[in-house]
Amino acid sequence: MIFVLFVYSKDSQFGVMKKNVEQCSIWVLMILLWSCSSKEEFLQPSRTTIISSVYASGEVKSKDQYQVYSKVNGMVDRVWVKKGQIVKKGDVLVQLENTSAQKNYESARLQYDNAAQEAQVNKWRELKESVEIAYKKYQTDSMVYFRQKQLWSKEIGTKLEYEQKELLFQQSKSNWIAAKARLADFNRQTAFNRSVQQKNVELTKSLQEDFFIRSAVDGKVYDLVKERGEWVTPAAPIAIIGSAGTYVIELAVDEKDIVKIKVGQTVTVRMDSYKDSVFSATVSSIDPIMNTKTRTFTIVASFVQQPAVLYPYLTVEANILIAQKEKALVIPIAYLTDQNEVKLSDGSWVKVETGLRNYQYVEIVKGITAESKLSRPVGK
Image (tube, rainbow, N blue to C red):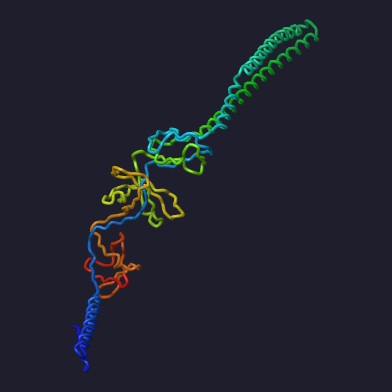
């Protein structure tokens, strides 16, 4: 009960009394407000479904989207495609001037072709004939030598004739072996030279191919940043290529939450382009390395049902479902202290064990029941 005391002054006039009454009314109102606000709010835990999720933001990207870079420096000689064009894997996007590379390739090709010219063939024929001649001479001298050797065994002829025939046999044998060795060396050197020249042709052709910048995937040209006559370096992208119709969601997850994320988890997605719609997706991959600048991990989610119209780099906000529990005993997070304690209606404090939580509610696993009456802690 509230008592209000009016004080009457002997010199009061009507105006003074009215002023005093107004001042007293203000005090009465303040006392009433204080009286009402001093009443504590009591709450009982409730049983409901609690969903725990991780918030992430990101953007839409086309599947297999990548930035196209050149392997070499050069001037754009020709642009073969335009923005929005559908391309196949291997299609030329941009061609750079490659005069020096072309000349190197032609020179290597000429050297390779020279390895099979007539001079080389004639040299091979000459060596082959020398082997054949040396072999015939070896056969003849061998027959003469063994005949003379047989006669000498019967003491027919002279020892000098026998030794001369033996010497001719040994010389013709050595000449035949040497001729074969020269032919083998020539064949080996020729094969080596052709192999080196072939590799040189392949290398110069590969270097020449670097001046033709091609698409690595079947897809769509989303962006093209170079025109004819502009300079290209390996440090700056030339184009952006990606899937023509399939899109994914690329999200940044804070490092403190990444251990909760698993492939296959459900993701609810909102986009500014579709303000009144919520889309469902699933986590399809997790980048295993953290971005040290933002302290976040990149995850990719795939739409369960893709919106009809999408474009790369549309902004996205998402919640990744971590866990869900039916009929959980929950209280508002505001009723829980940082030390996992709750205040009962009688003013006592109880330590509780918590389970799932989101930005509004927390599950109470142990410590209180559905019949417990809680008081909101001061400052919460």
